[in-house]
Image (cartoon, rainbow, N blue to C red; front, side):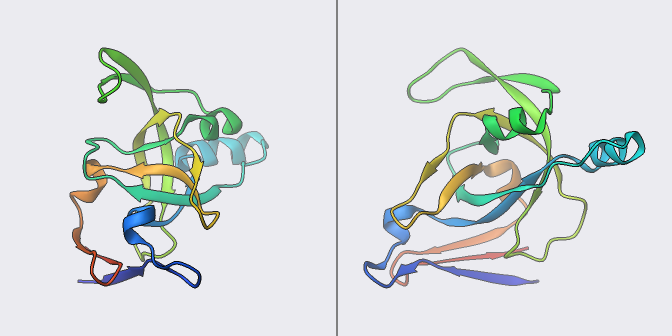
Length: 156
């Protein structure tokens, strides 16, 4: 079982896990099927967008900043009802995406269904959050949140 540790520390602030939340590097790109279509059609493949994913055990579905899909020109494939503490009875679009975590050595093509949301922000140390990693992806991992050591361990 591969094990990956993500130590949250800043030279000026020390331990930062409680401040930033559990984050890990992520890239979001167009799905492989769309890449193949672009190659056959002679259309340039947009470069993946790099940023950080916030691990969100309260989210049932993973979400990506919706502007990423607008910039790619990717259309939604579905919509689902969404509820948050601030909104009820709202629908959000679902997009196909190639999600990769550079810090993890995952197998497979990385194609997932993710919800498009307005969620982009920057942490105090300029790490741009572009994704919430919800329970739909977390169900494949064993996660240890070690607040005392400011460390998150993921294994699969």
